[in-house]
Image (tube, rainbow, N blue to C red):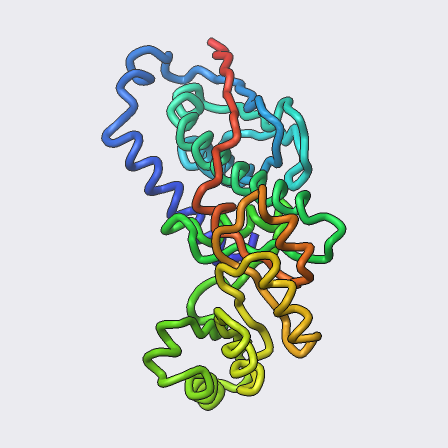
Amino acid sequence: MDQATRRELDHLVAVALAEDLGDGDRTALATVPAGSTAAAVVTQKAPGVIFGLEAAKAVFSALDPAAQFTQLSEEGLWREDGPVLGVRGDARAVISGERSALNLLAHLSGVATAAARYVKAVEGTGAQILDTRKTTPGMRLLEKAAVVAGGGKNHRIGLSDAYLIKENHIEMAGGIAAAVAGARAADAELPLEVECGNLDQVDEAIAAGAERLLLDNMTPTELSDVVAHVSGRAELEASGGVTLTSVAEIAASGVQFISVGAITHSAAALDLSLIVEVER
């Protein structure tokens, strides 16, 4: 995990625990003997890809720096079910951290699982599944890491990573050529992509020097036409309304990339549970 992602995780854990615990876990304080130790196992209860073990560990470690962990599953692999992570530490810390740890692990595993489903759906076509900026505020780096764990690829991380000239930019700049020229004048080395809705815009973007085109909300037939028309002169990315039902047909059009916002903004949490045994 790089430093930026670690900082995001540490901040997220602090916020999650402050939100959940407030001024203390009243139930745990009243019912769990002080000084007791607990051993717990997180278990996967539905098929999917596990990702986010570091997030779960960070929660328990924030409450008990001496907590010990046993990794019982590998991240980034599709598995049906089974034990995921063992934790042993202060019983109050384990029980109080359960929900925050599972929330993070289940969500990130859900993102990885969603990515894996899309990647599987386009297997053999050569198309790559990309994520988008439609991420949970404060969790972008973690969610994008989860996409990679599921076999997908990251698009730009944020607005500073690359030029993505969309219809509003084109309108305000006075056209595709003017928008591309302005971008190239500002930074000629930054990757540049232009959103196109028809063949005329495709031709204008290529003439302006765009190396990648974002083909927005086109049908598979329209995408196939653009692929044939461009004939390798630019990379092509399909976007807009992509679903698990439609993604294989979109990939068959010949585009190199398919961006899917749903793998982050609509990922269902993977079903996990935690069972605790208190050692008195």
